[in-house]
Figure 1 (cartoon, one colour):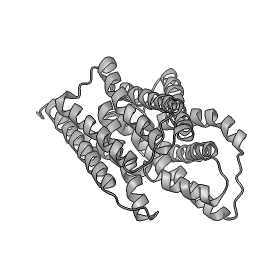
Figure 2 (tube, rainbow, N blue to C red):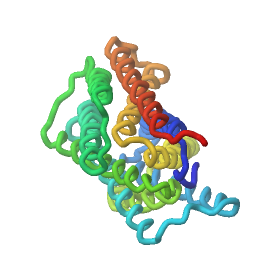
Figure 3 (cartoon, rainbow, N blue to C red):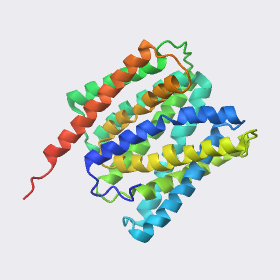
Figure 4 (cartoon, rainbow, N blue to C red):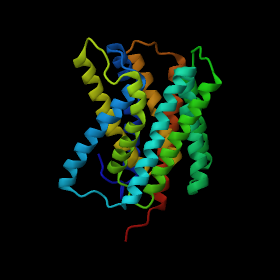
Length: 314
């Protein structure tokens, strides 16, 4: 995991975000296996995901600090980043779970992930002057269309207003987290590892009351399988992926970040077909192609735009 985003090439930042979106897409399948293995609830799983991920991140930080000092950031700024990103992450996760419980997985996913790019593009334009351009707007529209087709195609989804409000709140938390990360990263002193550790610490504290209400320790007849699944969730799509996310989001335009993260439902759909025995439908293929096309288009546009702005070598 990178300690800092300072000097990180945009191309590498895009790669970090692509890996993040793909690994985040494995969480749903892993969580489904966790639920089948024991009686762990959603908030308890989220708490252990953050708490165990925090332990791994602290161990990584300790090992790396011996070989290379972390980026120097003022203490007040580090505290502000930890609280702001942690609260954003907590709202993002908690409101999303509430939306799923209220209006179902399909509608909650479409509203949360669909509203995210729109809110982020608007927020980035108003607060940081970032412009998408006509091509970028078309790419975002294509991505949202692909998300809707992929998630709602062939489903009997029920829309409930309360669930939609929870999903919009979740999107707002995601928007705040992304915009703040980008804003703080523009001066080249973003400490991705420190940001991730602080965010996870705050998020774990926010989730702890909900986890205690559900029960911290699940009952299971397969404790080894449960531990292996939790170890995977805490390490790959959590400690690794969020470290890459905060590093990439600091150097890539916010709207581009939000669209690349739509690789998450693509990965989830592929895993559902390959591992969970779901049928490959026309909606799955169409939605996947639309999303992949939008992600590829915005990534290429981001890389070309950065090269045009880069100064010529002497």
